Amino acid sequence: MHINWFKYSAPVNFYPLAGRLILPFALLAIVLIVFGLYWGFAQTPDVLSDQKQYYRIIYPHVASAWMSMWLYVVMVAWALVGLVFNTRLSFMMASATAPTGALFTFIALVTGAIWGKTSWGTWWDWDPRLTSELILLFLYVGYMALQSAIEDPRRSDRASAVLAIVGLICIPIIFWSINCPDPNQCASLHQQSSLKYVESNILLAMLVTAVGFWMYSFAVIFMRVRRLILERERNASWVAELPEVK
Amino acid sequence: MSELIYAGGYGFFLWSAFGITAVLMLAEVVVEYRLHKKMIVRLKRMQRMNKA
Image 1 (cartoon, rainbow over the protein chains, first blue to last red):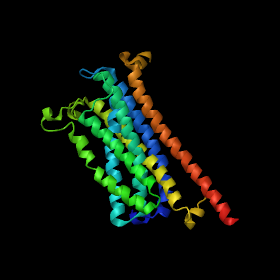
Image 2: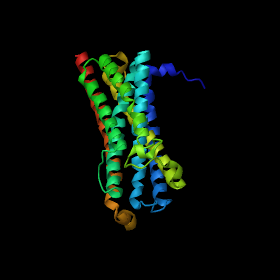
Image 3: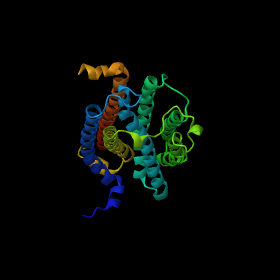
Image 4: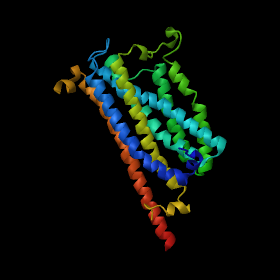
């Protein structure tokens, strides 16, 4: 089967495709998240080393933290494609990705604060991992604020794309904030990455939930990009011909 | 069931984390759905104005 991918770089062709993809991704997200959480509660121990039952915050926390970083990389990739090839849809995809990325960053911070209160006894600490994740939230907010501050969409797309690309430096900082070679130099309250040592059922539940969050992101981003397409292409003749607009 | 909700005395923290996550994710979908509907209404109004 041959798919002409370039065809879908035109908003007129991508709009109906995105509409058709929303439901499958939403259903996949529901199935995966429900299965992940069922597995995470039914097939895992109640205690994880020194952590009591509250350790299960790991499922929404880790999945949203991964998505916060991954969506930023995806947003930058779309922004780069937009800058290089000057494609409108790429900039729209970058714009559509930012709010969901910001939401997952916020969820990661809030669930992390709740977990921190139970295991560290404090909601917040200016530790490298928490602070760099907070900076990531500011980068998302800055990106969206810059977009809405400039009226001309072409200029706002380019300016915010540059900001997003510069902000990409935050992603390796978040990663290395708890994974530095010398743990003494990290001085982080947040524990180091311990995927290798996590019990297999907990790891499975975490991974399935994370994939579910990813499918959710696809569904919501497709919903948002359809609205952005309509907003920007509102004067195009094909928009007037859409059945829902007629 | 009550044991699951109680979560060894950490129910408030555990379910707050899950509740906040669920509410925010659902809210994003609802907001986006409503914004899309609003956009369609706006476009229909534009169409009517253009025809008139």
